[in-house]
Length: 361
Length: 206
Image 1: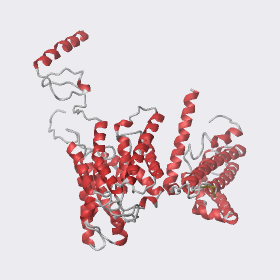
Image 2: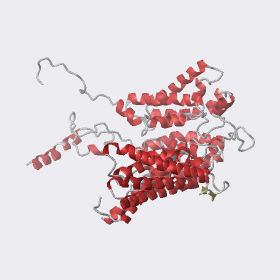
Image 3: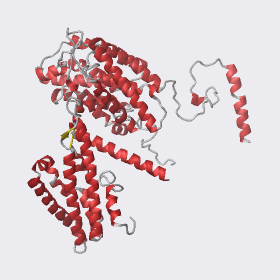
Image 4: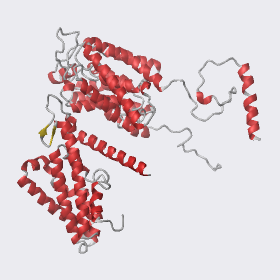
């Protein structure tokens, strides 16, 4: 009996609808295929909000947003930058492939997540960094930073930053050896201090405009703030990142920087300097906004971004290192599960004490 | 626990199937702190083996004399006595190693591996099984520390048991491996690998 009813419903109902209504242009998600479409009445199980975007689609757009930064770094540091990016990219992809093969999982290296890790890792390295070090960092980032936790979506820490932190501890000298961009010096490979190191250890402030366009020494992706900003705004335009995260991060950095600046303007740099130097832009637009390693709730995202921004400036101004973006994000990454739990929104209708005077239960 | 396993069984259990570091996760503090070179690992392992064997023997001998209420303080006093012996011995004959190990030799007193053997085994068994059990545990502790220390020494300083095998020109040492972070990473990977092979062996056996 029930089978018959189902059959009649299935065969009779959808057909007139399909012929009567003009074909809808919005892409129909696969999960809803089985449900007949009745205007005003859709019966389906959750999730009810679906869109056509996929992980590879988002990841490829992120790569697109990172591309200008890569090109600018290649312009500034020439062959060094190119070979470093390519090395990190292929080392990450190869590690991802081997890990997935070893774990017996489907090979999904084309989804672009490992490629992003590789590019981001390369962008955090100094141009003169040796290639074997870049390979070690890539392997660590993917194998220990991501695959050991179960792969994409399950990692606690941002893999690229974890790889960078490992390299920082592994090669503390090599990773702080910076060279001038090829656009300044006539001789290749002249070592130079980054604007942050100049500020911290010698008290020399750099010109804001130079920092904005990035004609300074530094990591590949640290130099040009404007290009990173463009890439980030593109991601914002596509709706892949929540504006709260970069805004909270950069805003907290600026306010904390301003606080220190007013305490002692001789010793500490001004807030704008903080935003334009080092990994601030790269971190704010591409690492703080990582979908996997940031909280999911609005309040959690505010707390995450603002605390990370404050920590970054505190490390820069008071800590022993010239740069604090990496550790600030990694530190807050570890709080994400807690933040998600603390800031869980109230389920509609729950947790309210409804006064029922003499009412029915 | 099997009813009456052989003495050899008591010994080998500590080596692999109930290894204090890789399986029971006891004695983590020395395993992480002093495994930055092969020699340090060996010295720490042997000192701990000495203490655990002596303490377990003594606890086993006096197990009927000690009232249950004060057994833990009694064990600690016994262990502390032997630790002092080991500490003074190292300081007298191997001052360099003693300097490297620093406060971690006196800290053997609170190594839960030793307390665990005394509490769970020696206080309930006769002398001979207790000695074999403690010896197996101590050797199990030692081999893990030596391997861990060697891995960290090779990667962190390019040498093994203080013999340089990778010169600075060929290999830039990974500083992180001598730092605490390297201890956590290498121990975690080591335990993970051992568990992986164990599970695979169990799968095949089924």
